[in-house]
Image (tube, rainbow, N blue to C red):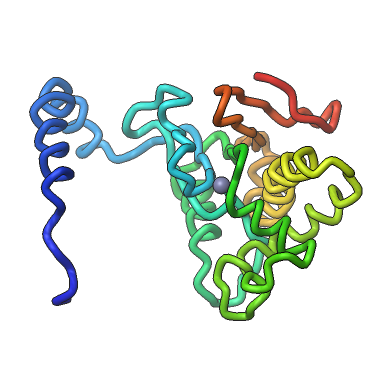
Length: 216
Ligand SMILES: [Zn+2]
């Protein structure tokens, strides 16, 4: 692969800083993680967005979370069609092999992917409607969510509601995976929906009793 280059200097420098401090101070812990394998209690599915800092929010250490990130924290419908399904593969591994106790879908404010879906559904993003747009076709997953929020008049409110729909549509699709539904029914797995307000550090959790997200 002749196109790959060596790591930029600033990243190499940061790495050496980590190795000399955080790693050096916890060497035994890292060695234990390496020899005993991973036993995370939870899987977190979050957006790729660089502002969503999953491990910081929960003060998580290495080995605690099995994390999958994609555009707009979406879980696609169960589709065992022999195609390449990265998110579904991660869910299958977390639930069937790692036997995590929780799957958490974490949405967030000012999500670019959700905004794209919103604009596409309102006819303002023709580039996302192209068959060749990976983002557009991925965001099709959220179209049923848009149908549920399209009548909200205030645009900012509608966009936030769609961000929360990204979490709910994902949880609905998650339950369509037979091994997930089975694990939930057996009481071995619980699923959770969260939404993080980046600007004020807020965290809301979906409550099925009220059908709303409320502050944690
Ligand atoms: Zn996002």
